[in-house]
Length: 286
Image (cartoon, rainbow, N blue to C red; front, side, top):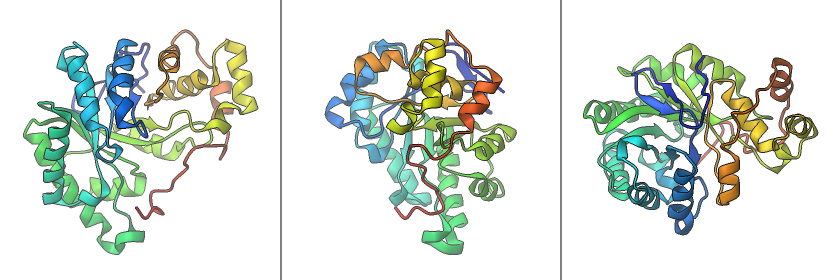
């Protein structure tokens, strides 16, 4: 299991592409502040920025990357295909729109944002995912994307996709945090050499005020948020914390001067349903 030792230390994907082992998320970051906070994240040392078409801030993310003064190859940029654009032809068109908004020559990682599920599409769901993925494979082979993957795919969705794909997903971005550890999905991905990224890695306020996590944080003289991120990193998971506050953007990077014990890892991992979205991909209808 790969594990990073600094904010910029890379993890190697199955196609040998290197991805910084911690990223900066922009979900629910208003477009009007996105450029500013992404620049602050890059100044704080982040080299991995995560966005999505549905976030409405791809333009501002791309602007920040260009305005940062960093070499393009030194910043890893991810975006995602929204649910309304599934299918081969629509995916290709949606990717062009994403790239136009970003204003970049290539994308480091492109993800299917959510799997088509049987609740919405019945027995046609696997075919829809396969057709969408076929477009991803074409974009990948064209060199316009360095790596391709999925988001919110659980083992059952991955099994169906792996049965038909020619290029295996390199990343699965799922909700992971104390209270929603997704242990089965994490084990499945690692067993199949699929890197796991954690969206909402800090969950919500209930997690950060949980007595167990607060006690561990006090022991190490760190914040509950830092303990959550450290718990994910020690599992070989790539966390994607977000914030619009400069002090917290920097604070979230300071997780490499302590290490949780095995007992503490297990204790934190035993917390259940104490915050976060906790969405089940097979039950969503958006």
